[in-house]
Length: 550
Image (cartoon, rainbow, N blue to C red; front, side, top):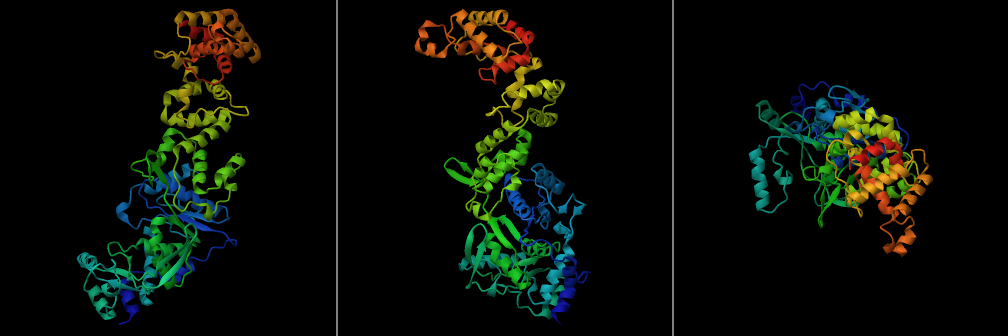
């Protein structure tokens, strides 16, 4: 009995050979220096900001070199599969402007010549590789039961030995081919283990593109590479096969996989394959009191991508923030190249945080405010309409009814050197401009934010005097302001702030108090955009109507 006989027994239904697979997946024809990366999630249905952060880096590294960025669905753990999980991943990534050159389009379709890109559809490919390893005496069937493995672990713990299936604990490693063949024929359950050639007492030096040089003991554990339950590979082996066949040059992944590097490097070496370069990135962190912890999808609302969609935070602003925490030199570049496409920035591994970036919501919101402030009013309107159509139908109807008027509202103090930065998300806008719509202004009881002048009779005198004797819709801003000053002089308020500060007791108040009364009367708010522009948009009749209800 030979190893080939054993391999043929195990893979008796396999219709493809190792050699056939190699011919089917030729080396990619790319220019020198082009990088091939992959985003390889499990279809669990939940995409969080840590995923967006990693995918952003993976895409950026590939695209800036003229390489390939592809999607691979790692669904070998069928217990974690969620219905429509692939579609949800694709939709969330697309919403954050992260699109793939190759990979699944949906559960049934894909693009690219190196698929299937869903691991559960690559069963025969993995089988051909495992069969080849068995034939080369680099893999073997293991018949140890869960009970056997449990007892082994308990013994290792008792004698304070390393945990794992290695050396004297690898009981099935030295089974004869005849015995293994017979036990399989008898229907015994088994898995396939990699036959490690490593020596734990020897060291390997590994150069991680983010962490730098790291020293590890060689791998000597005979890890499972093919599971018995469904015939699908473990992550470790699928990673070897897929990254080799799909031409991955750089594996960018969570630092949790760092300890697996010795095994992965040995797998590549045993198969005679050049390994990809590795970059292990630390997770996105959050400050929690005095402690720093990993951003949590269970604890932190900002971890979920739905958070940004529901609030209407502009995606380009989120991406700019992701770039800020991805590379320490991005922020300075962004400040000096505010109008350039982010793809013009070159991301480098040596500028990625070794310890993991801190996720700062306030910083993200600040970037979002800057972003919205630079948009044209018509662009803000279009984005606001898109958001309201999904989340606020009544307001959507209103801004569509008054489209040009709404655009003019959104344009107040926008086309100037330092535009206003009132809102960071589209869900906020209504709270800033609702008073400009009569349907909302006259809807409920109003809460006026009166400041220094609170006496109702004084307020009415100021407003009636102003609207009857001073206000005109035809006035330019200078004329409007001069008339405001005349009103002050007429009513005993200081029109000159310098004089008021020198002799405050000589006046009832100042022009600031007068303008505040008018502002609050027309908007209920003590802080608003430019009062002149608000009044121009409201018009005299609507201004009178608002004054008359006081």
